[in-house]
Amino acid sequence: MSREIRKCIESLQPYNAGKPIEELEREMGIKNIIKMASNENPLGPSPKAVEAIKMTAGEMNYYPDGSGFYLRQKLAEIHKVEPDEIMVGNGSDEIVGLITQMIIEPGDEVIISELAFVRYEMAVQFMGGKSIVVPAKDRYAHDLPAMKKSITDKTKIIFICNPNNPTGTMISQKEMDEFMEGISDDILIVFDEAYYEFVTSPEYAQSMVYFKDKRNVMILRTFSKIYGLAGLRIGYAITDKEWVSNLNRVRPPFNVNRIAQAAALASLDDKEHVEKSHQMNTQGKEYIYQQLKEMGISYTETQGNFILIDTGKDGREVYQKLLEQGVIVRPMGMYKLPQHIRVTIGTMEENIRFIDSFKKLYNS
Image (tube, rainbow, N blue to C red; front, side, top):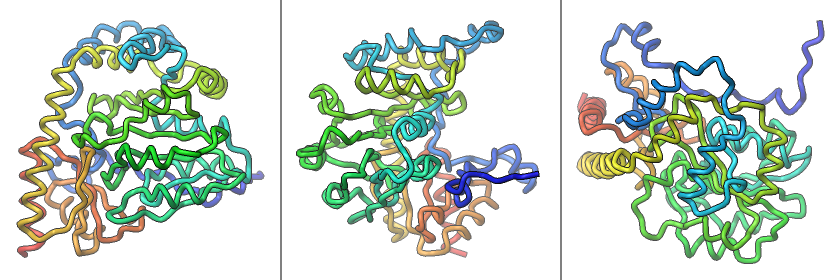
């Protein structure tokens, strides 16, 4: 029996999402494991979202609203755009894949920053496109001038992750304005802003100004991070109506389930939960910064809900030793940062436990 697959798939590496806590507890015989690896909100979802989930649970015999009508209406009000300028996806990650399916032909080029979210390159490879990976600058930030110089007549998309995962770095308004000047509207600029709600810097680039200025852009946001709905998989894109129409041609029918839509809609009404999550994150990162400074450990300042740490050791070994103490972090070998780990900012109790476990590795 022939089992041939497309050539571009042969070297594609599956995304490693890590094991669930329950499985690790069974394997290692450890209780009270804390997960600080996947940039989830440790406070969980909004109580309003939980209530909406309960109320919707009895309607699972019906297909969801395929267009996400009510959610798009609400998002349009918040962002002051038209509902037809919004597309809802099964997480913003699904939308990344849909974008490349919609645009990329074999041989087309997509510009991506080194140390940006690995799914961009995977989505391009899946379509037989070519990723032009531009080296990062300074402390692992996008080198926008170099990315701009990489544009050719084959360039179809430029992905910009701001704040960037996994480094936490951000792009300022001045830097983004200079980059956008002179960029052809034949190229789609995709702003992935999954961590937008965690930003504290007043210099952060607001991509909506380019959308309002009718530039060829797409803005991706998610409910997985600050809204605490990672387990339901729901995100959205803001872009012009033509792109939304074409995305709807390639997206699967009923791609966002009924419970996810109800929870997302309710989450938007709970500003208190978002603010509480933001404050917890800001306080937590300052605590971790202080502790790492006292230890003499290098880290990258973040605008997200995670911190990239240069352990000065084998990152995989650090990950394993922390795991043995019941703390899950993310080793960064897949990003060619073999000494680094990425740790999600948790509750203060979780942050203290991480630091205590981390210190043991250096004091033993």
